[in-house]
Image (cartoon, rainbow, N blue to C red; front, top):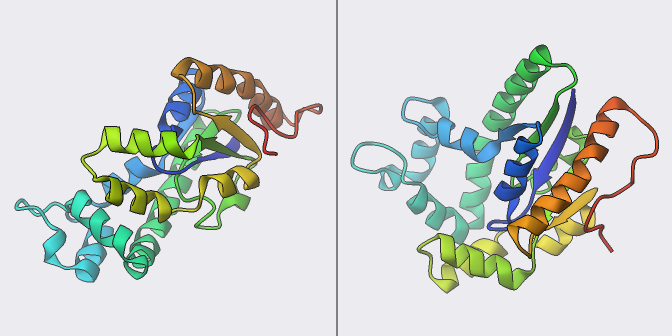
Length: 215
C-alpha cells in the first residue's frame, strides 16, 4: 500500500482534487472529516477543547460551534497552536487505523490523506509523495468568500493564518493548479494518477514531479 499526502490552503480546490482521485480508485482519508468526528460530544478531544476554550464555543445542544471556534483560533495564534496540539495527534491516530484497515483490505491500495496542515504539522516525511492543490491568490479569496459568510477581512485573516500557497507549492512533489475550470483540474489529476500507481509499484521511470511542476 502506498500513502500519499494531499494538501493546500483553505479554498484552494483540495477537496475537488481529492474527489477526482477517489473517482480514479484511490482511498481518501479526509482529515477534516476525522476532525468533525473527534469534535462530537463525549469524545476525549471534545472534552479537552471545551476545557481549553470554555463553554462559549458550545451550541445550545452542547455541540462545538465550529464557526465560533474558528473565529477564536484564526484571530489568536496561541489558541490555534493549542487547538492543533489537541486535535492533530488524535487525527493521526485515527488515520493510522484507517491505513491499516485499507492495507488489510488491499495491500496494493493507493491511499491519499487529504489534510490542510501537512507542512505546518511537519508530517510530510510520513508520505511517499506530497501533492499540493494550488490556485492563484485572487481565486482563493474569491472562492472562500463565495462558499462562506465571512467578511473580506475575516477571509483574508484565515488565508494569512496558513502557510502561503506559494511556499506549499515550492515544497511539493506534485502540484495541481486549480485556478481554472473543474475540467482542467480533473485533467491534471488524471494525468498524475498513473505516476502514483507506478510509484506504489516501485516501477522506474516515474516523473519527479507532476502537472504544474514547481518552478
